[in-house]
Image 1 (cartoon, rainbow, N blue to C red):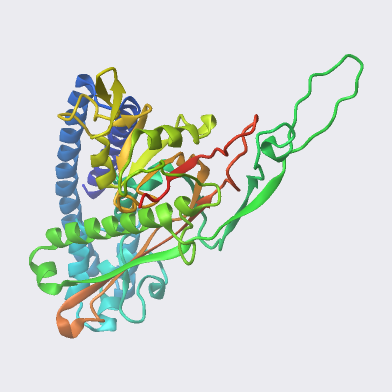
Image 2: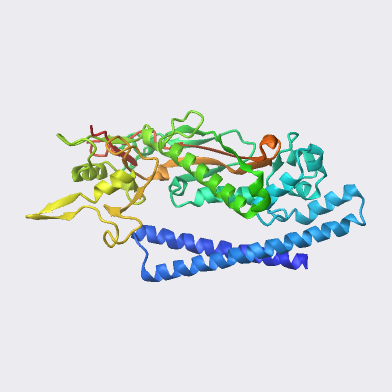
Length: 449
């Protein structure tokens, strides 16, 4: 019976994965077009309903599996010596990323029930199975911290990565294997598009008959990606864990995912590179468009937009995005282009002010973000193609839970650590083939004060 239920769960997970891939493709198509069609909207609603049904089925299935595993554990305990009980339980849940716990909150409540005794944690077969390792000290720390089952660590990381405002979806993400301190990769050492400078030195020639060919080669530079630790460390009341483990699970996973997403986004946008990613806004390749003569403070005018677009190299326009503060986005709706004695809006959300979510300027999406600078300061509006921004991520999140640190406060401690780094792969802005102002994949508007 238990094996059948596990097979059903695997099939359910595969079904969910397929639906989520379809939904991701649907949203990508909508972002490219600027809006959802009626057909896409209908499918979007159907997918969301189906995912909700799957979530309910999975929760019910997980609870049933957990109950059967507890019964199986009790049955084994009556016929096997104590040392074999934990080993057998470990084997029975080794292939289950949730380690037999229906929710993250239920796992945390199990840790709480052990009390402050380290020995009690070690003696708990369910937690030993959750540790997922024959060597108990690898899964249970000497201070009583217990490694969280991998499904819930993955759930937090996926939540951060897949949030609609995550900047990682626009970046070039490279995995960094566990145990690897850093990775060094070749970047093109290119500063000009003039003949002999493209790709750092590759040049083509028109060949005359019976003439020798001239050899050229690209020039590279080293780009080092060294993931830095980002952590969330907090507490939740034991009362909530006892009485509402499901609610505790939602608070912990959503809260941790949201905070990790926010800190990564802020660093990718404008990090100083000290113990964190070097943000693309301050990268050496970014170009800054000056304000207009006589332009009022904290304003955006259509000439700013036109000149920013002119500084975006044509090779990077197809995947570019307008990132801006909420105040800057609101200001765009007041911008018009004079036509005769009247005018037309420079920007409107798709379908007009009654429709959204993403508007467009020059055919590229407008994405409001919290990390952008205040209206009127450099960084309040940025035009960028983040395909040139490389992010190195050490897979997953190291997660632990312990009730020992705040035992006298009736609180359980949670710690989540991920490792990430990032920087632009471009050395500098590019001098165009025919000269003129430099062009780049990252363009920002100067301060208007």
